[in-house]
Image (tube, rainbow, N blue to C red; front, side, top):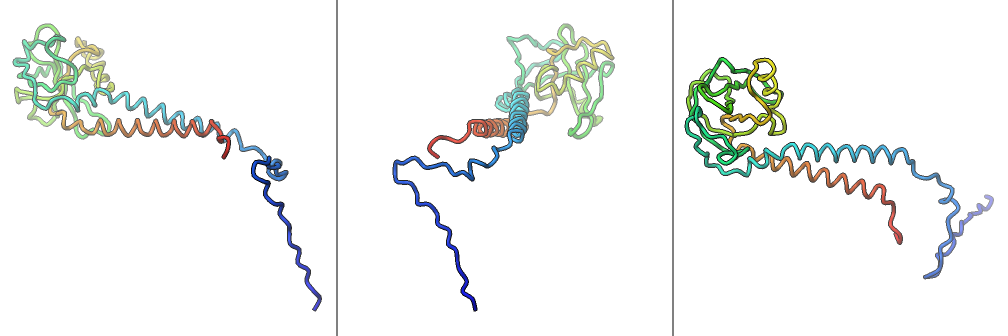
Amino acid sequence: MPDTATTVEEFPAPPAPGAVDALDEVLVGLPAPPQARRRVLGVLLTGISVASLFLAFQLRDDVRYAMARSTPTLLGDGRTADLGPESVAANQFVTVRATASTAGAVTYARVLWPGEQVVFPVAGRDGQALYVQVPDDGVSLSRGEFTGRLVPFGAAGGRYAAVGRYLQGSLGAPVTGSTWLLVDGASPRGNLWAPVLASLLLALALGDLALLLRLFRGPRKGL
């Protein structure tokens, strides 16, 4: 049998300590990383960060209400209750005695919210209007006493703003973004999900911003 020659490729020895390493011609000839892919990834990370920060900002009222005291403030008779800034504040847990005025009431439903809700003005009230929201179960309207979250129509991330606009535009009710709404049954303990969700959104935004910084910072010297 003929002898088979084996060719052993010789690799250059590593440079001496402190010496400048010669550039590998093969590595120099490789194409640069695609910039378009980096830009697309940067846009995605930026969009996710902005959206997360926006959603966390929208939850600020819910976070405040979750931190409110669990003992309701007694407002007394809804017809004469003082709703001035020195007496009540947004995202406060309150109790009020009131009679529903069905003439100016409206029923609505929200996406991802079980059942329908009824929003009605307090009957016999003069001056600044006060509205109450209760479940449309045929019983809550006649209770006469309501305990829950006091919030302006324009607050709480705008989830009640559409109802306020409907009351103003379709029924001619004196409702603005600062008109008070008592959401019956909404307790501070029931809003403990808000700080958790806001923290997750902030963590997601900060994580994406860190990845974005590493993406465009490039490799560090000496590595």
